[in-house]
Image 1 (cartoon, rainbow, N blue to C red):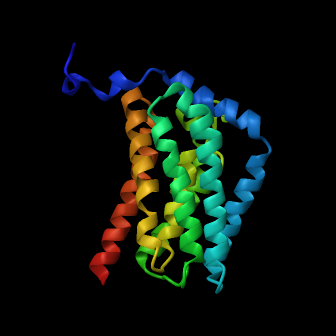
Image 2 (cartoon, rainbow, N blue to C red; image 1 turned 60 degrees about the horizontal axis):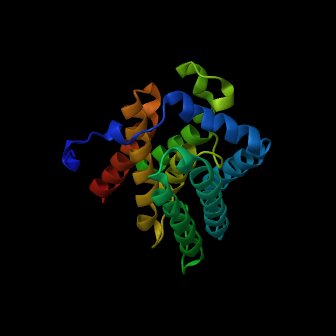
Length: 221
């Protein structure tokens, strides 16, 4: 028997890119037209962040929490875990992120959106990428529109948009909320890279941009 350190990441993947993207097609067919509602929720979040109204941080956190819980159950546990056994251990992290968002939004002080620094502006760009750019990617990678990844339905755009929101937010719980979306995007990007799929770079780019924005904020202090 080979030792564990002789295995490569691709040895643990038992599915092809065709099976992977077919999973998104089936999810989109099952949940349409819920996409319209989740996208509308995402656009509402962006508008609230731009307006920076007081006492709306709780509602933003609760909407994101509900979507993380939904994606963790409907996509990761119910679909992705069927073709990738490791996802059964990852899916609970989305539930944990939902709890952290809900409690963070309800905590004393909650989330505020008064930042105007470079990191917050990068956060707005990241939000736009998760909400608008991600659903438009399939033709660029020669895939059908039916495999599009949509905020609130698929994990990558949900995590990316959330990171953008967090970059624009301030408050005690905010630093704790970055870890799970960042780790998910790293896992997703590495999985796509291992499959040889060219769409590996968007989740890795989003994660890298978020880390760079946080570093810029820390340097500017």
